[in-house]
Image 1 (cartoon, rainbow, N blue to C red):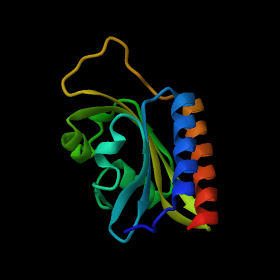
Image 2 (image 1 turned 90 degrees about the horizontal axis):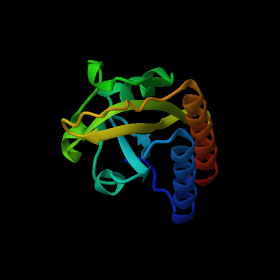
Image 3 (image 1 turned 180 degrees about the vertical axis):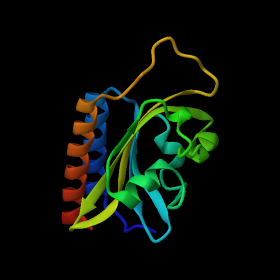
Amino acid sequence: MPPEIDDATSSLLLEVLRRCCGVVHCTDSALWLADTDHLHPVIGFGPHSETFIGSYSHPLEEGLMSMVYASGQPFCENNIQSNPQHSSRLDQQLSIQTDAMMVVPVVSKGELAGVITCVHTSAVGASTNEARVFSSQDMSELEFTAAVAGRILETSV
């Protein structure tokens, strides 16, 4: 399991995620910290976060989040369902569909600590008239958020 995060640090990280979601116009974001074989969502903002924060772990050998963690490179996919590397494990648990996703690595104390995700979701099988996508400016915002989160973790964990 990843290290415990105290309440004050959790509140600060949650505010950082909330701010990012407002800027990139998405409803869901999460900070995932790694251990030897899983990514664990430790802080989340959005309507689905209470359902999986602290009760879900994602295998490090599966999906786009794990690819970003392994490579240390940010990634954005605006048509996630067409990407064969996408893991729908969490989608199935939450009964939602991820439509677009940004994932950025989080570095703390000079080490890769985990990733931050921002997603656009919809109800399973829903067709939307307007596709919600992420832009290069959105990716820049998430990279800034990841840098801030990494710095916060450095001073607290």
